[in-house]
Length: 83
Image (cartoon, rainbow, N blue to C red; front, side):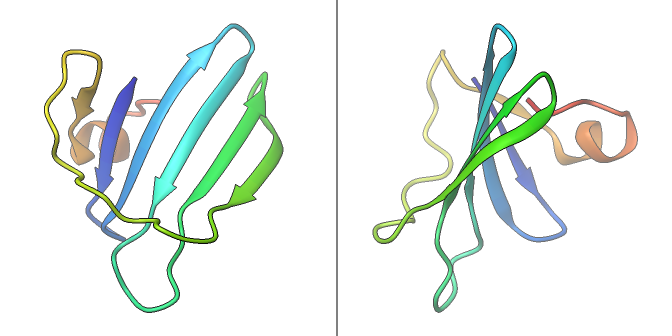
């Protein structure tokens, strides 16, 4: 699993690939009416987006061996495809 904090929007992205599918949970900057989204893609094409209706915020900087933090500049400037 990869984690990226977009320094342009302060949204946190958590994502992983499994075969042709990719799963990305987008946790937006904490502000009024903001909710998290789950996007599912197959072969790079979005096939589903789900809105979380409640409890969209949590700890963004929990350290786990299963989560690799990806620096913002790697995603923006170096063409890192997330996830």
